[in-house]
Length: 128
Ligand code: HEC
Image (cartoon, rainbow, N blue to C red; front, side, top):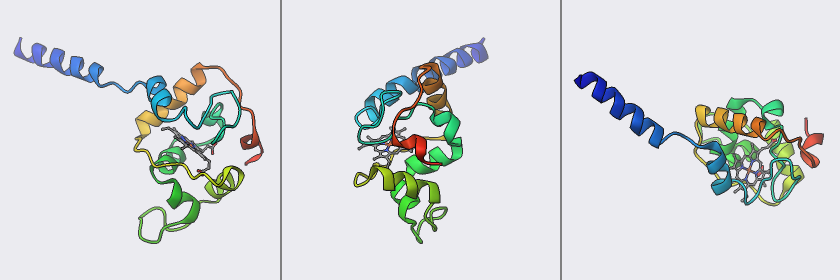
């Protein structure tokens, strides 16, 4: 019985803190990004799941400046990322601020973007 109660409490707290991608997007990303509404400060994120890999997005949101310019002092960001450089060149001068998102959260964001069934518009479509 104690084990059951423990499991119940765990699943309850897990649900309480479950990551809500839609809410997270509205609070943290919507000021600069649309999903299917075209470019604003940053690129339209519709179709992100089709054009970028989960790991690339995790790395990019964690440290955009490191991806765009390279940082010899930061492991994994020693060299600038070619794709991130091109994206920045199209949307400069604003450089995206840093966010901490893990792989499961980016996966949830991809699912959320898919669920909107929107197609991207704007300059981002030309960046390969
Ligand atoms: C202050 C504005 C701003 C906010 C807030 C912001 N971004 Fe960005 N984002 C940008 C800009 C500008 C770029 C493109 C240029 C750059 O910074 O490299 C970008 C680029 C991106 C890219 C690359 C897109 C591609 O197709 O290559 C991703 C992914 C991204 N943002 C995700 C997010 C997520 C997720 C959030 C919320 C957690 C977020 N951004 C919040 C401004 C913002």
